[in-house]
Length: 420
Image (cartoon, rainbow, N blue to C red; front, side, top):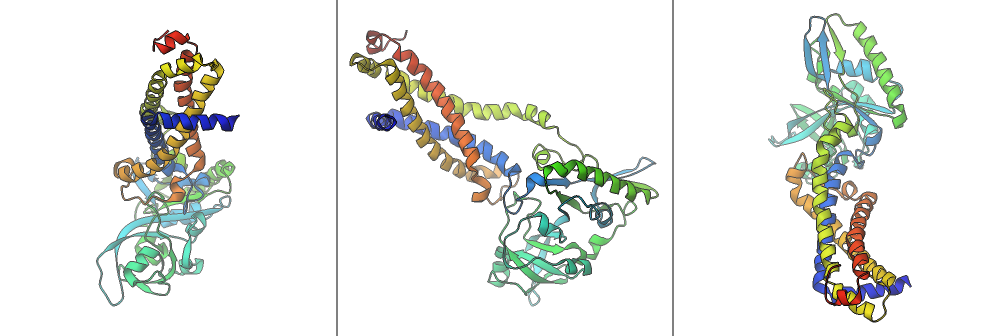
C-alpha cells in the first residue's frame, strides 16, 4: 500500500512540474540555510582530526601574575609554571603546553623569506591531539628533554620546500637554528586552532622560550591543554590543579599565579570565553538566541509559505477527486506522501548546497576565512537528519493543516475554489 502511495505521489509530482520544482527548491534553500547555521556551530565544537578528543579537553588560555601590592599582569604562563603546575598532574591522560608564532624558514644552502606558522610544543602534544603521520614520527621525549632541534612539518610544506612529501631527515633553518625533520603529517585546518600549525618543534630547542624574567618567573608565552580520560574527571583535575597551584605559590615571594576562570571547555570557548572571563552558556544562548531564531525562522517561513501556496492551488483538483469517490483520509494521506517526497528530494539538494554556501561565505561566517574545510569536519549525519526532521515537521504542518481543511470542504466549494 505504501509503495502504491509513493508511486501515485511521484506521478502527481510529474503532473505539476512547476509548482513542485518551486516547492523542492524552497525546501532545499531552507535546509541549506539551516545547515549553514548548524555547520558553523559544529566546526567550533565538534570533534575531528586532529582535535579528535575535544569533548574530553580542558583549556588554560590565560594566566595572571598578581602581588599583594595590587600589581596584576595578565597574559600567559611561563615554562616554569607549566613544569610545576601542569606536568606534575596525575589525573589527566595527557597535558601539553603550546605557543605559536610565524617565522621565516630557510634551507641550509638557500636563504628563504616566506613565513610559516610554527607551533612550539612538547611530547604531550602528540598524545593530546590525533595526527595522521604520512612519514616518520613526532619528536621524542628524549629530544624534548635534551632540547634537540627536531621538527614535524606538513606534507604541503615538505612539497614546497623540498619538492617531495617525504622530507624526513632533511634540515630546515628557523631563527638560525638547524632543525632535523622527523615526521610529515597531513595539512591541518585552521578551525582546529589549538592543533593547527605548519611546523611543530620542541619548545626546549628555543632558549628564549625557556627564560622566565617577568613577574618572578610566572609570565610567559604558553597556554596549556589538558586531555582527561573522561569528562567525569574534570572536577578531580581542577581540584588537583588547585593543589599544585597552591604549592607553587608557597615558594613565591612577591607574585602569585592565578588562572582566573580557567580551565574552560571547548563549549565555553565557542560561547566566547577566553579564560579571563567565562561566558555562561545560558547567557550566551539568551544573547545569541534571537539571531539564531531569526536565521532559522526565515527558512521556516519560506517552507510554510511555499507548501501552503502549493496546497491551496490544488483545491480544484481535490474537489474533482472527491467527486470521483476519493475519501478524506486518502486525500490527506496522498498529499502528505507527496510532501514527504518533496522534503527528501529538497533535503538532499539542500545538504549539498549548504556545503557550497559555507565554502563561498566562510570569509565572514568563520573566524578565519582561509580555513580548510574537510569532509570529516562537515559531514555529521546525525545533525543533517535533525535538520531534515525539523524541516519535515514544518512541511507536515504547513501541508497537513491546509490539506485537512480543503479535504473537508464540500465538493462544490472545492470545485469553485472557494474558502470555507
